[in-house]
Image (cartoon, rainbow, N blue to C red; front, side, top):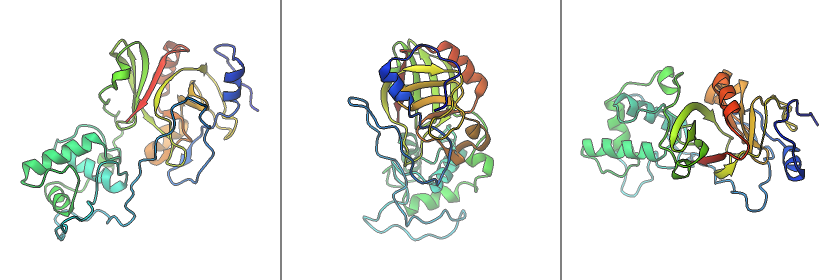
Length: 283
């Protein structure tokens, strides 16, 4: 086992068992399953993976291309809970229409649902919040094909509205929908940064946690990858810097940890966060 180079505090037996399997490391977006850290009794469990469950979904067509109207009761092309590249394109087009301000994430959540409802209401369509053929054709007709920069902007993501559990005390408030971490003290945002999460096979656990221990320099004992500025909050899962995230962005994923790509911001956060501070991971 690799030894930790800089301990922030002495670990007890329970923590020692936890860090014996620090299971984080970068993986490709399509990587196969890897063994995540098993949750201990009473720990928040991993939520079901939120992926595109429509293997037959058509690929996005060019603006203005003819499309048959959806039959009554037909399954929508895109809906709340889906995750796909088609959703990413939808979000980029909605951003062109100034119906969303956040960068595309490829996940169809509450913000996308609300934007689609607004669009449907504006154009005399049934305001379901889901995208059927008629809605998709209308969106395409009023927008242009998104560029690579529009689909994956290099700029920092806009912070999501804080979860109510983030409004008191010292909290790393981590939104899966906006892919951001907000460091908050007594309800006020001190700093923010982009983050990415585990894949569908090794999802980042959601819930209310606390920082269990910290390590300025650490190497995964399973994947043997560097994890600088690690702040462990759920057994082997931690907030830490990822050079892979910095290089590849959202084309990759972690094995469950919360990756940060801005090393300077994270180093400053690391110095401020204390063992025992809250961590909230939410949609």
